Image (cartoon, rainbow, N blue to C red; front, side, top):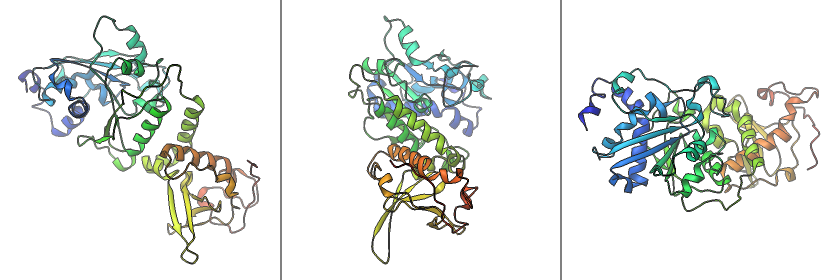
Length: 383
């Protein structure tokens, strides 16, 4: 390691280094695994797309200057460009990630230790604007990487000609990403597919992922890395179906209360399928997870909720939904996000109205579902 870079690390505690170097270490590992040809480059230019107020832009990206040492090529020079509208304080660019007041760049407690390292070029605008405005005579970056939730925060919109990723993809720039957990990877994969692209091979677990205070609920920062397949591109004139993207984000809103309690696990529960067997009849029923922690039988339309002992039992106060209204279930082998969206929509359309009805003895809370044995009939749509 070059002495000029090493002197930034000597006085710093290990816990801080694991945090500050998480982004460059993750990027270095992705390059070594997925783009090993870049190891022979004398100069490496990487764009960090969707950067925001967080670890991917910490101290104006100075920590990325350790990439040569992390790659085992200490004489390599590195140029980093941070691109993302949320890098600007007070940004009004729409994002699901944060409010405008949270924009800007974080300075760490050890910013002075890294002051001698070259800062990244900061472009506080969408990737497309940077791509269109760059000097056409200058070479394209050798790689582009985005940390979660760069993809989801903008509804995958960057996977379009208008927003920039496709321009880089068509120019042959390798595109890599990091997700926080398997469930978030499902979201990223689904958004990629909606925009006519595809992942190249399976995602790779990152041993350098950063533990969060509650990893079971929030996952790990940069837990999984993956690469966009440069051979799969949408045809000319292709556009993602806005209605599908709206369905996805409405489902995310539906799942927010449960997410605040159990975290990312809710995205596996809602739309997940459990098969149970009747010990007396040997009949097999498929139960699908729904918001509010309930299950619904695809065969009978019955809702099941947890009782005080944690076991599921049928909600007798709610008349079953006609099974034909559940017959469009995508299937157990369908994409997890498609099942998640289906479950949220069915719950919102057929089961949640129970809580909104003025019928006598209607429950006031989800926890009240099992308290009253008298069934409550509600009028359901015919189709």
